[in-house]
Image (tube, rainbow, N blue to C red; front, top):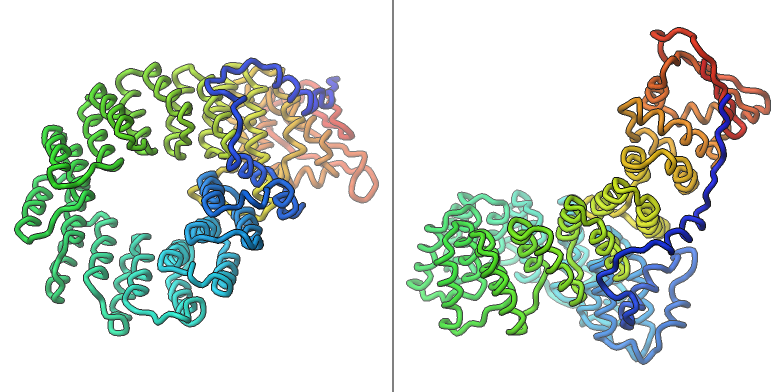
Length: 603
């Protein structure tokens, strides 16, 4: 007889263990938070909607602090951290109630962007209605573009046209719609590369809203973004036939289309044609050519174009430096790229995410972990928060190069900044930690992320497929099972199961592939499952356990038959259910396992 014990570890014990762990921290955790970061943390950690947000904001934010720049910075942080849209909306509404606060179009547009990104279109319309009544001057073409672009992305063609009509007849009723508003509608479809819909709108409405050169450039840009150079040239000739004269934007779009396809020679010929047409190239045009030269591995031409920028009475910006930096990295000249980053710093030109991402890629291919870790430390010292693709890239590189301490440091840094990293970054970190026996730390990271996701779900948050921050229990269990010693398995199951709302759904995705996994997994899993009171009857058990679970039981050697005997069935009497597993094994041995109030008999 085998008696499985109930959970022997409690969550608070695990947290206590974690507090004693010695984790390498490359950044100072004692550094004082700014007021903006403090408010962002309060908003993100608040248990909304269980408790209203306004009272905590009223008690924690002095009225004098609610300046226009302060509110813009808080909303910017909430936007960058992919915070819950309803919380950001609640913060902005709280600010609007303050008579001393003078809202800006930037704050309104950021709030609108957060809401529409998470598909809270009803709240977005509500916000626009309110702004129309109290601050109509904040309703601009940009706010219209934010709303229409998200509706075009997430909803149908007809719903987008209906939204445009609602804006025309209601929200922006004080303004007479013209070509500028028509261009916003076209841009909404072109940004989503929905060129069939964009052309249909153009053909349907161009008689109502006379198009201009900007209209044609928007459509040309849409064809360029779809990656079809032929379509770009065909529409360019249609533009000429309609009597529109190309400007420097038109040439820049065509040049970019050729550069992205690696046709640098054609792009240079267009660049020369700009001069003949008396179209002065913009900084964006030259930046595009520098990037195109890098794609073509023509580093000499890239440097020449960059050096010619001041001669054209222009000043290079971050994008221009990034284009040259990318060209240097493509040519494997990491030393020159490092010097270029230093030059940017001396000229007070900020490093953005493209700068860091490009440089990290170059260092990974040349100097390895030492070069990457050095740049990573500098990035953290500057308090720069990278974007998702850079975070995932760094996490993968750290864990693959036996520097899981750096991965853990990156995770803690992001959490301190109020950012919830992508689930793929969490999966990489948990795998790396479990593979090295650091299961307690892995579970704490997992729990922190799950807590943020749970709060977002309680708030009614909707996760875009491109965001997917929510971690999964089955992925964590898989890492424990495959990368950790057996002693950790049972108590971690006991900790995670009570938090798992739909255990059967998670269970079906667990890794039952090998006999070793089945043996390590099955007994502590059943024990924790029963102890957590998820089982009410054998009938409930049978509903949750699908064929993958039965396949796991079949991995147990010498087993051909099992019984579940419950002392608390639905009808109050003993409930017994039996089913065959495999006919290939003979009845060779008996094992009786007590799981909570359930008896599982293997025969």
